[in-house]
Image (cartoon, rainbow, N blue to C red; front, top):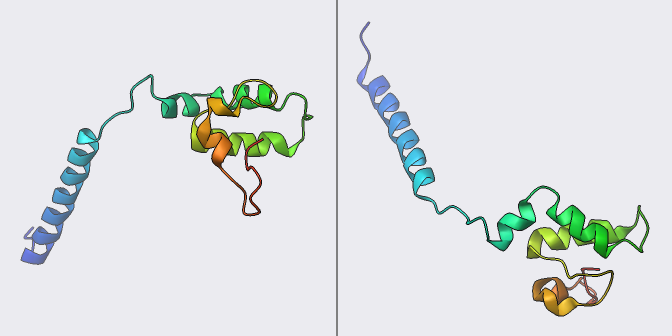
Length: 104
């Protein structure tokens, strides 16, 4: 079976792009186990922190929805059910379009 020059060129390009993808993936920095981002993406981190934060707000409240959104973006949630916003400046400073705090 004889391959045309065009077919050989296409196969070569596919192989090269695959090798570049693999090389780039291997060189990308991996997050450390101690980074805040890895903690926020750890199973249950945001659920646990937001569960405490929204404990007095009711089970089906908007508090959990917005807290989880804020935790995902900021990688932290202030302790307690209210206040302590200085523990997480990103959480404290994220505002809704109307200027009110986005995070509970």
